[in-house]
Image 1 (tube, one colour):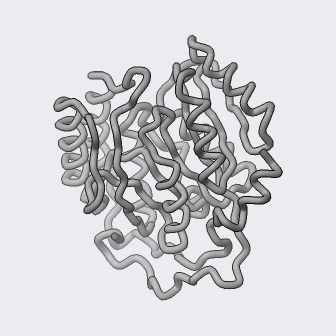
Image 2 (cartoon, rainbow, N blue to C red):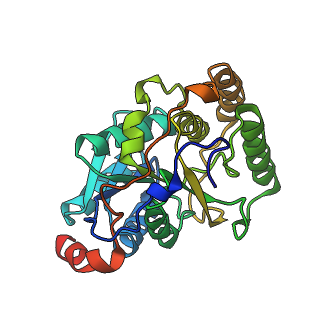
Length: 283
């Protein structure tokens, strides 16, 4: 999919021939994910041609210490220790800034609850040859949720529909937290102006990307319920989402002010098959 108005000549997209492989970073925020972080990191290292940044909010269960131990044994894993739990959105923003400061070309957001499949992450990176942001979507053909309780299914569906209707988003899964970004788009966004701290961060970033003239693609994912640990979703997070989406509507940029964002690539998303040997050496 693309945004609702013409924003760029897609003929500018190049096939990747003659381009060098860019550098990708997977952001994995953690809070009390001691039981999951080792498995998730191992699967990402094995299946995704990218480095990893674990962003830990001083987890009481020792997730940060375990993450540091994992990082000490791998040249592809780093840990960003934050002093306290201050929200998923803040964690991702700190991770994005860390990535941009180190000149990564692509940034991928991924949960640590085993619900996001690393195989899908690799495909999302490939799709960045044709889009500025790629969303792992539960609500396109081929996407699904598995073993979700009824309450969570209802909240997720209504939240996505509400956000799309109020903010005129084309993205069918507006609340998805499984996303791959091109850094040239992230540098165009005013990250200092982001207001959200909880899960509505995903909606706010989709809104900012749309207003920046970005081309968005969605790839289907199957999203199972977490196997270990507890969901961080709460009534306060839902309330934040309802209020912030309404406020964002008042700041919507008129279509006439949206400048086209060039789709021509300077680098190519890294390929698993080409990076495999280097990744094994670094690990």
